Image (cartoon, rainbow, N blue to C red):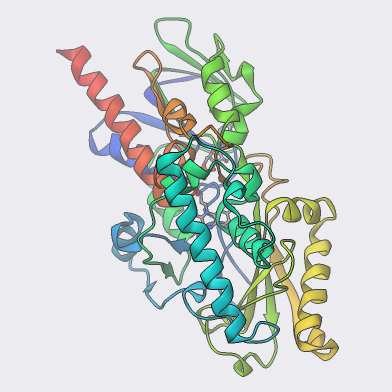
Length: 415
Ligand SMILES: Cc1cc2nc3c(=O)[nH]c(=O)nc-3n(C[C@H](O)[C@H](O)[C@H](O)COP(=O)(O)OP(=O)(O)OC[C@H]3O[C@@H](n4cnc5c(N)ncnc54)[C@H](O)[C@@H]3O)c2cc1C
């Protein structure tokens, strides 16, 4: 790409950027998606393994699926939307976790969520962990599940923000991949790949977007970068936008990583069953057995524990999973599993994490991050969503909202 000119530049080609681009294209507005990676999709990324299975390394579940805009999009692309219930809505296999204990745990977790709900209506915001019942034997497992949801431990998380998340409990999957669905939705857009945006100069009459492949001039920009990608880049905007940087810092990206394992003699297990590695510590993985009926295990690691494993490289995840599975099934089981793939999202320079959470007291950073600047710089991405943050549909909703703001501003200026 040499230097170019467009009406709207979209910075980042993930769920939010693609949704924004489609909305602008429908309104016949010239737009260009500028994406740092060599592919579209961002944290939505499907790869195909050697057996031909589509593996979602990032988002896999269409949360709040019956109101999730990606579900009809996947269907319109001719994909198969699997509506079978997710493993976490069924009891775990009773291996190392008898059903009676599962019942106790579910009660303790439910009581914790109820206290969270009540406290956020009555008290100033604080860390969600303040609502733990001291000495409850399930606090570690509640913490582990919290990391799977938020990517961070409850002592790091705003109780109010956690409570603001809206989920209607309907969860579906796309057999051919959620990431593939999102990337394909951007295929008809004008996109420049391998093109990190270095600076957005908004000092003049028109915007100047400096990229690794040249300068783009534009009337408006929609910035969809993950919060972690600009929290420490004060130089991203010229002049600087310290309030944006501050808002992004209030919304760090938590960490979650999936390790895919092949599983021999998989028929022994029920399709879409699950297990926790351990129930007595927060540093444990959850294992989804036979996803879609495939002879595989999807191991999920999150929070500071995933960050520790990332520091040890890809092998550290496999070694850890093997040690936990050995604890559950005995040493012979190890011969049945082999690593297929892992992507370390924390080490990925264009995301540096998995999904956003708000630090205690920082729930309102989401609205501050989303606020437009001078009616020509707009912001989108999952972290900008008050109720659907951390998700791909949150990305879609904020992308469309930002595009609508840009369209309205153009209409107003023409009048
Ligand atoms: C392991 C894991 C599991 C998940 N599971 C689920 C799930 O089951 N369901 C769900 O809904 N969500 C899930 N998510 C979260 C979901 O993937 C994200 O919330 C969503 O994809 C974010 O979309 P986005 O457009 O806001 O951001 P992104 O997808 O991060 O898009 C931002 C884009 O900006 C690009 N970029 C970065 N820096 C620059 C730069 N300087 N210049 C230009 N471009 C740049 C990035 O490459 C990226 O493409 C999961 C995520 C992970 C990592």
